[in-house]
Amino acid sequence: MERIVEPWEHASQFNAQMGVHSSLDHLKIRIFPLSLSGTVFSWFLALSPNSINTWSQLEHKFHEYFYNGDNELRLCDLISVRQNLDEPIAEYIRRFRDTKNRCYSLIISEKNLVELALNGLRSHIKEKSEGYEFLTINQVLQRALAQESRSKESKFKSDRLGMHMLHSDSSDDENSEVYVAEFVWSSSDIPSTCASLKPISKI
Figure 1 (tube, rainbow, N blue to C red):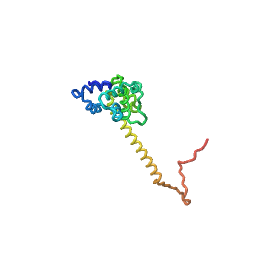
Figure 2 (cartoon, rainbow, N blue to C red):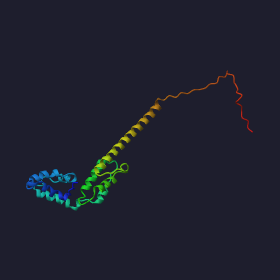
Figure 3 (tube, one colour):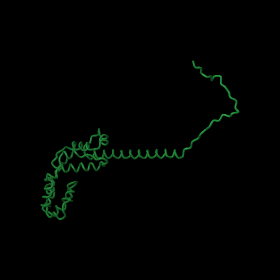
Figure 4 (cartoon, one colour):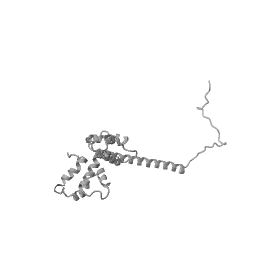
């Protein structure tokens, strides 16, 4: 299993990977951004234009950023990440990963990370994911996205059914016809009696 390189190791490892080209500062400055991702790449994009002229400057700023305690988050920050009301699953997982990326000193197993991501999901999504064994956050994402999609389809069908029933009721009220029958006893008809039908005597 490939070891995850910590941010403070990244610049040193990149420099070593450049091999014989490690002395070419201008080349390293151009290639270094390609080795970045997530919040680290966002940090690089936020650097002031023309503020980096040498590799030493870039390396210094890189280490300064990560060694600055003001930018580092803790386990409690990661635990507090929760899916907001009506927040898409993908956006929640992105926020969770971004927070994890800023917990530079945090050492946590993938299993525990998955559990934290699951706990942050909204209850109706989390309940439908119970009983499944997830090995990575990406598996949590895929399962949650499937549940989110089913929930949207169910709500859509329910809304359509409700609108159809409402329309049908309205149509019935407007187009229905009422038929009334009246029984008329002619005065010329001779009354008849039935022997089996007699008034009940009260005791």
